[in-house]
Length: 443
Ligand code: ADP
Figure 1 (cartoon, rainbow, N blue to C red):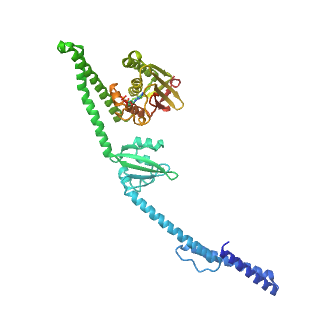
Figure 2 (spheres, rainbow, N blue to C red):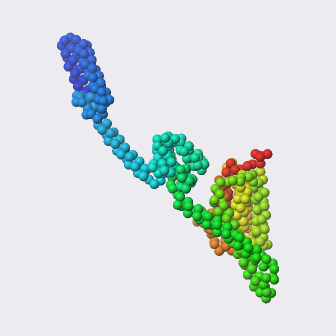
Figure 3 (cartoon, protein in one colour):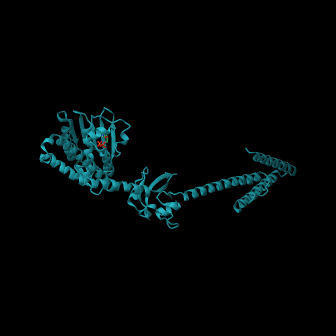
């Protein structure tokens, strides 16, 4: 119990005793006690009214001089108010400093509420998204920034990555947008101008596409002549036959390797440039895999002769896929032909195609050389090879898995690689349920 309350109790007790004695002397105990209680109550009511007036009138004023327990009440409330005022001032100052800092940040920053409504933005956001105060305050960001990629990103709710799209006010400016959740229900949208990087990347892509395209025609001509030369020995004197034959064979082999490289570069450029999936059809994947399996048997025979591989294809004919036929064929053949390339003679290659509750899956496993853990995350990079000499020797370009990754991305699918040196490899492509079609659903 506080000191002021204790002394109040003492005071009340002293007063009651005094009134009791007076009452006894005057022979009116009840009257005196009642008088005392009424007076005490009146004093409290009076102070309560003063307190209320002081509290309502102005918290800045010092409390009035009050006697007894009410003096302590006034003083304690006054102290509490002072402390709160200081704290509030400090928070406001901090908030102002934070807003000043974010306002001059070069990255566009927008604070969004639960429904995506705009609560605050900085100057850069005003320029990048064309936001105007006060009319855009409280508007939903999806109504003002209408790019389909952004709308999809916003509604998907998975904000782990970024989305790129041109600024709604200037098509020449490319933005990379991130969204971060904060507090209980707020979102912080941060947009960065990536125009220089985007342009550089575009220049690189155009360069690769153009060079590949330009190389294609001369290569076709060279290959054509080499083919004719190898079939018609009237092109060179008979005494050179043996030497020429070998040279022409090597030239044809290298020319075809280069043609393959150019074709893969062009395919990659096309996959990169063409962002959307325009041609989606229902693909009988099991037929496609059976055909690739037969081609793999031929390849295996060419590479290993009598010691060819055992290749099995177990594909569920009831599971089909919605996607792009050419792209998927290219991705699946890359995986299956790689298994043939990197598996020693008489090894086993198993291809499985099936569906479960999560979607459709392609599994290509082999008993080949395997890959050590440090290489696995980098396999889908362009020109990344575990063993460059071996890959070149087998006619590899180092682009196959990069193509696989791009094709899978375009089908919202993912690639998993399970492998260890000497233990073989399994490449798994997981396709989403939304693209998986079971025959029962078609018929
Ligand atoms: P490449 O044309 O060289 O085969 P890829 O992009 O298809 O290029 O593959 C990249 C590298 O991954 C290959 O060079 C090889 O080292 C490794 N690789 C791919 N598939 C397999 C596999 N089935 N077994 C072992 N290594 C593989």
